[in-house]
Image (cartoon, one colour):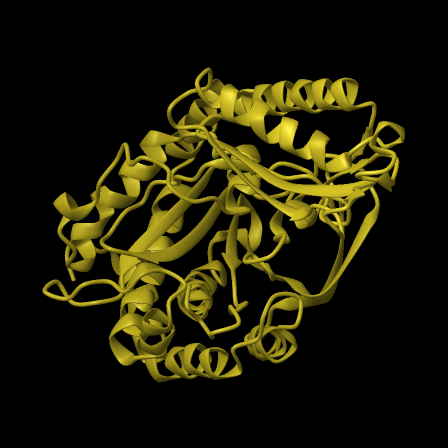
Length: 411
């Protein structure tokens, strides 16, 4: 190890001593391979482990829908709290553990093991220093996500700094991700018209499919006048039942993404206008409501760079950490990172001379339970723990990060 003080050495040695235990957790979750909202074995395993460690565990959370305010029952979500001495910051760790239908093809078992490793190390220090440690079990990231429901439910109100992790091609400590939104999935964008025989009496009909097609055309014209980093995805999931009937029901599934939360809000407004135009042109009615957006992280560059600067003390090459990365995909992590100073430690899951399998592929699912990626997740956990300790015990640095977050926060 590099330049570590006695507390930090204690933390790292504690994690090392639990290596086989952490591997067991990662491997068991990998074997369970439970899809979102069905992670009962995985969440129970983690909750049992935290209770054995002395955490107070709230099993099953009832969150809030951020847009509509109704309750969201999440039996596989949890909150585990370990209270240190009075005073000091509250450090949050977010763990994921949901699989895809083909297994852990996004490595969420590794997100769980990295967070578990960080919790093991930080708990050892919080036995003697001021501050609290809170671990969140956040299910169903691959579906509609749970983090925004947990956040809106008030379960994260006390957190000063939040830590997350994910596998990647190499090391990184920056939170990136496109903001995304879609209509509520029970309707998507469903147009209602008037049915009629398409040959005998077409003049009596009002085609819902025409409205969907005009909306699609409007979205295509809209693309030219949005930022190059914006994304519009859609499919026609229902276009009618027979070619010789004027369709009175038709449905468009659409998703919008942007690299900026304000830009996403503006895109929603403009797409609303496209849909209104299709309604007027076809004499039909659209039924939809936008779900709560997953926003982009509020950037905190000094937080990200602090973590990379600590990496050499764990034997990592700081030059491998990259910044200014272009967002590619989306995650409900952005909902939390939009509201709370958050860092995401990305770690490689293959050796330097190997190619990372495509995300969500069978090949990635096959390796995410192997020894090397689990060891890398433990190293990511060590970096999270080290960063949390060094910033959390430095009031001046902590306040600088909070001030930077507030400066960059945009409604």
